[in-house]
Length: 536
Image 1 (cartoon, one colour):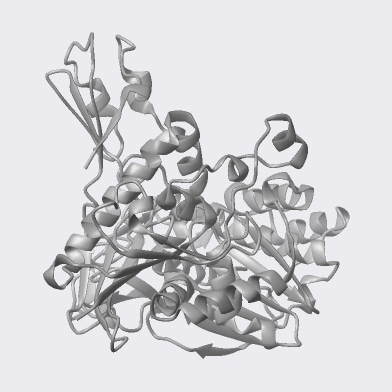
Image 2 (spheres, helix red, strand yellow; image 1 turned 180 degrees about the horizontal axis):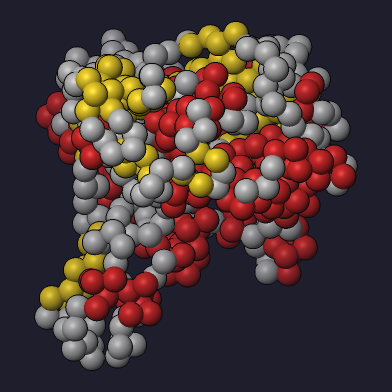
C-alpha cells in the first residue's frame, strides 16, 4: 500500500488521517488533545514564536507531526505523500517560513520594519526541504491562501460550504479557537477571524475537553434535572445520566461514563440553563455557584466567563462583517457551521444564544472542512491547482478584527452582556446608538441540514487514536536554581517539572506567554525562557 497522510493543523489540536493513495480509503485517524505550541490560541502561538524563536515553534510542530506519524503506523514505516491544511500561521510553522508578515497589522508598520509578505500559493515540495522531515523522503502538498492572512482553512470553509454557488447572503463560521468566518454578499466575500479562544473546543473550561470519546457533548433540561449526552468510542452521541444539577445526584443512570465536557456541551448547557433561569448572567443560580453534571463533571461561574468571551467574540465577528458589507444582521439568510464544535453543537441551541445570526432561515453543519480539503489534495494534484484558481478568482475583503473599530465596540458590549450583567435590551440599544448592525432575539426556527453526523465522518477501519500527550518538551539547565520547586507548584496545568536544576516544560499543557507564572514565582529570577531548547 502506498501511504499518504492528510493533516489539519488546528490551533486547538491536530487531526490526521492515514490514507491508501491507490484506493483513496482512509485507514486510521489520530487526533491530539492540544496544539504542541505553548498557549491556548493563535496569538499565544505567534507571541511565543516572535519572542523565543520561530525555529523553536517549527521544531515543536514537526516533532508533534512525527509522533502523529508513528501513531498512524504507516505500512513499512514509509510515507509517500503528506498534505496539510490550516490557518497561515500554523502552515508557516510547519513549513518553517517567516511569520513576520502575519504577526504585524498595518502596511505602514510592515514598511517601516521592512517586512516582506511570504509566498503562500499552492505548492508541492520535497520533505527534504522542510527541516526535520529530511528523512521522510516524500512529497508535501501545501494548499493556497486567498490572501496572506486568509489561509487555506478559510478557503476550505468557503469552498466546501457551497456558498460560492449561492445567490443568497450567506455566512460560514468555523467554530474553533480562531473562529474563521466568511460572509458572502453578491460576488464579494468578507472574511475575518475572531480569535474566540479555546472554550468552544472545551479548553479553558475546568472539566473541558476537545471532542473525543467519553465526553459530554449535549445537555437537555428534563423535569428539573439535566440529561447528559456523551460521545462513545466511535464518536456517536449516546444518552447518559439524568442528574440533579444542584448536587450531581443521579436521578436515572445512563449506559456510558463521562470524563469531561466538550465546548458543544457547554453551549447546550448555557442555552438550557438560561432558558430555565438556572443561569442569569453573569451568575449561576445555585448555592455553590456551579452546575453539576454526571460523573463529577462540573460547570462553574469561571467557566461561564470563559464561554461568554468566546460566544461574544463570535457574535461580534458576525456584526463586524455585516458592518463592513453595509448590511444588517437581519439580511443574513443562510449559515454554515464547520469544525468539531460546529458539527456536534445543537444548531438551534447555538442559534438561540447568538452564535448564528438571529434571522437565518437555514443552517447547514458541514464538518471538518480543513481535513476534507487536505485529503482531497493528498489524492489529487488537479484538485490542488483547482483550489489555487478559485483562491485567485475570489473577490475578497479581509477585515482585521484586531484593528477594526466596529469589532472593538461590539466586543466590549458583548463582554458587558456576558460577564457584567448588562441587559440584552441595553446591548441592542448601544449597538444602534453606535451605528452598528443590531441583533435581536430569535423569532423563528430555521431549517437545519446536518450533512455529517461527525466532524470526521470516516475514521478508517483501524479506528481512532487519541494522543493524550503530543510528546513535545522544552528543556533547560538553570544556573542558580535553589530547587525550591515554586515554579512547579504554581503551574496551573502541571506542565512544568524541575529536578536538580533541570527544567522540563510539556509544551502542549503550557499556557504560554499570557501565563508565565513560573517565571514570576522564581525567587532567584533565574528562569529564562530564552534558554529553553526543544526536546522531542
